[in-house]
Length: 377
Image 1 (tube, rainbow, N blue to C red):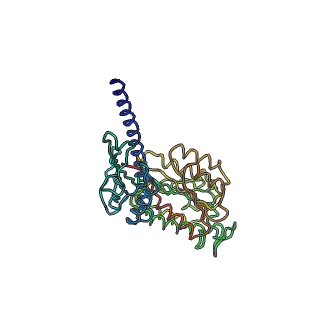
Image 2 (tube, rainbow, N blue to C red; image 1 turned 90 degrees about the vertical axis):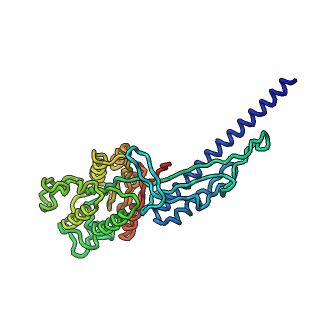
Image 3 (cartoon, rainbow, N blue to C red; image 1 turned 120 degrees about the vertical axis):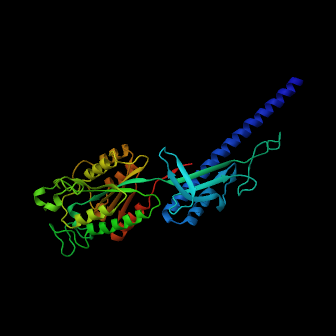
């Protein structure tokens, strides 16, 4: 009987231990999920709004959508810290409070008697003095650096006006005349001016390259100035090449602005070999000079549907296999297509359609504010 009683007590103690340990592990898992979600919501709001109080509010709101240990989870504003994360050469991250351009949000989650959320009551808290469980978790979400390649349609239709009609030119425009004010190319140039202005203000600097593309065109038709590879001015390269690297990856964006202006000063020719543009952008983002531990993205813009070269879905699959996202912007009604949307979907990028010049500018401004977010702590 003595041994039986001892065995019953031991079995009961083991049962209490097993149940409470499982409850503690579940609470830890739930707290980690809630804390990580709050940190990511906070930094997303920070990058989108550039407003620290809104970032704090977004983190608090996301935390309240979770429950931990059977109770609603909550944080206080003092638990949210906005700061700056810097990636070190070994891949680790350091976080500091504040900074002139904060790019990270740290959430200090805790469930204690002195915190907003109370400790977790264990199943057998009244037995064997097992008490309450007070888990803590620190989560930091940070924006990471990007390598970006602008991949722009420079086919003949980019000289058309904004009505969406084929061969309809703005006043003074026609074939063999440089794109005029009111042309699609001019609208794109305005959108890119806004894009470059926005991206200069982002919290994490990005290197940007420029690729333009159309289709094979006889070089005999082109003026000498348009028959040069702008990336290597000492070497003449026929512009019947479908896609050209106009400027390489750089933190300085003035070469891009100059290249866009040079393209504006000459007629635009060719049709829509979208896959050629994607291939050249992929080549640019997989070159030896691409920085390690960065997110690589292509921003593809077109005013039409592909009509030359292989299906751009195939080119998108190559980009995806090499870890590159493609964000697609289509401009005017004739550019909407299942293929353009599929290019974005295949790689996990965004698809944006602009019906007019103002929407095109807004689309590029939105893309400038998109920074990849990762949990760094």
